[in-house]
Image (cartoon, rainbow, N blue to C red; front, side, top):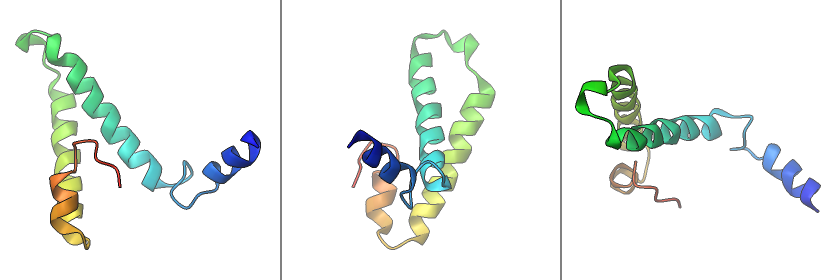
Length: 83
């Protein structure tokens, strides 16, 4: 049974073989790394990480304004809301 669930997950249209899986995974990874850095002193802020976070936020915000559930997706873009 576990094999069929894994096979189903692997072959899903939004599974790990597609950008629809990896783009949000990378976005969440950058966000979690940023949260971990809250305890760091301001002098050690990673500027490349902040730029990556800003760019991915802008890309996702722009994308959310183009598709149908505009304000719903835009407002929950980085809050962890899954639908």
